[in-house]
Image 1: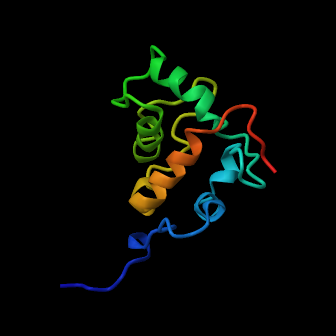
Image 2: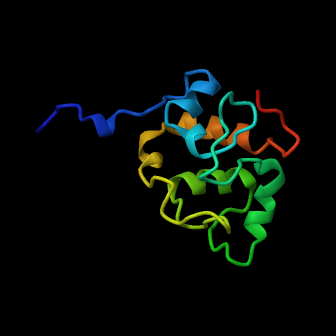
Length: 124
């Protein structure tokens, strides 16, 4: 049995880090505006004001995912980013490997943060 630890098996974040690190280590701010995360002013992916836009996305006629709540939608979007691509943003841009490189705890904490963020939320 090969017991060598491969880099792709090491989570980018464990969930024990400060929230800011949970978003910055994987590179989320490069593509997304994320309220509450300094420097998260990316323009490639949609802004993550999911307290405002999450329900709209779940109710979009083009959404064919399984999420029933905004929290579930966020988790689904990380684990299977092609399930629903927000209109006006390019397909196949969100890395499909994020779900395997974030711990479950980190993903839950990130989703909890994002589901409460609205367009009026501040971004230092």
